[in-house]
Image (cartoon, rainbow, N blue to C red):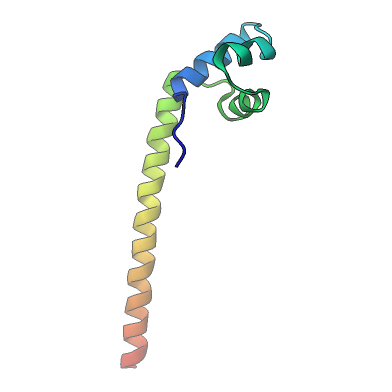
Length: 88
């Protein structure tokens, strides 16, 4: 997996500078990013604060754990159904 150059907190700081009125081209030169990267960041992190980002990470982690639990439950159910169908 590719290593990220910027943390989410740094990205939010760059976007705050963009909201403050700095031109996109100047921001891109300042931080060494492309226009496309800046606009992708805007699409993903627009209007977020650092607190929102931390909350999002917690929710994503919780969602990942719940998906794992559901997958394990589904596997258990399929195994039990196969055992029941063999016995019947």
